Amino acid sequence: MARCQLLVVTNLWPTEADPGYGSFVEAQMESLRPLGVAFDVLFINGRTSRWNYVRAVRELRRILKVKPYDLIHAHFGLSGWVARCQGKVPVVVSFMGDDVLGRFKRSGRITLYGRLLQASSYVLARLVAAVIVKSREMKSKLRFDSAHVIPNGVDLNLFRPGDPAEARRTLGLDAKKKFVLFPSNPAEERKRYDLIEAAVARARQAVPELEILHARGVPGARMPLYMNAADVLVLASLAEGSPNAVKEAMATNLPVISVDVGDAADLIGPTEGCYLVPREAEAIAAKIVEVCRRSTRTRGREWISRLATENVAKQVVEVYAAVTRP
Image (cartoon, rainbow, N blue to C red; front, side, top):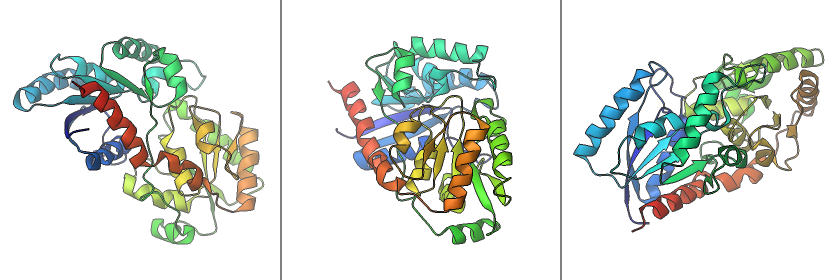
């Protein structure tokens, strides 16, 4: 496509206080530059105040008076509503996960807020020029046949196998420990940190040197260190779109133990040393012990290479081209 001038509207973007927040959105947008996409960013810090969404509508209208854009790409449903509060520029919305799947309590029930998110996303999808979702499950939940299923890509130049011993030295970790990587917020109920804690406690009976390695708020550029320092990534979430941590682990050949959530089964594929397990502490613990005893890396990088950022970028640009075509 010809050069495209884009405005990104998102509530997911790295900040000085949390440099890992939304880094996957930033990575996707940066991957589009070699394909002729130039972009500016309107970041909505919805975590500090919900009123920032209202303020963002005013800021969006001010921006559009000053500079012309071919397209607005909104990331997450709430950001999409901000982008839709104007009629001059076509809007593409990338739904990210819980904006379609809902917000979950630890019990597995969807919160009222989660149901409101789902309902609003259902309406929004039918008011914009194009919709991107991260998994087939999301497309099915949205009940929108024309949605494009495009998972986030993984930067294979950044996320690559490295020396585990060197990574541990850099991070100041004990070389004799075994580490289960948890790269999310433990307080986020849908991530089921309580279940991972329980599984690690069980596994520690056979592997006493086992610990949980936390990597919340880590800048994207440093995450490969954690992937290479860890022995296994465990995912026990109640809902996911297309879990980026699994792709990053696969790219570094880190073993993955995951429940069947989002597109985790597709991401793991037939890779030896990676496992799908029931959402039960005992089953997760058994595989943690197995991985720790094997103490070998996988060949996950070969399987996940199809989702290299440059491959995914081409799919996103194809969506842009269809929307902006005269």
